Length: 163
Image (tube, rainbow, N blue to C red):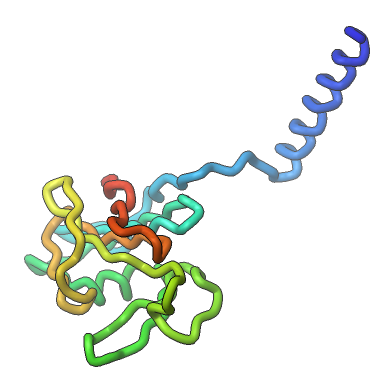
């Protein structure tokens, strides 16, 4: 039995080493922010943090020169892909970073949806306006969390980390 366990362990170790050599790597539940920032030399920086239903996160940084940047401009410059629809409430974000892959409406009944948060001074607050009306200052962030429709009080994504 001891001999069998040794060979099984050795085989597993070889399989892991082979996967790593071929470019495989263990997956992380959350990704770390990249070290690059769009327009990094600008005087001010704001962030986009996206947390998927699975828990994985994406963070992007955007430099800007004025005192503020609006949420839609931040999203557009960040390079985070999103799809939207315009309604009587304004711009509605329906999909971010390919989640969901397809949709027919932004807030389908009993289905997950994107909840919007704004971070300033290191604390998240649920947005009281749509993304077009959000105003951000240096080191502020917009946060998106794809949440279950049954969640009565969605949690914000992880805080933005300066890159």
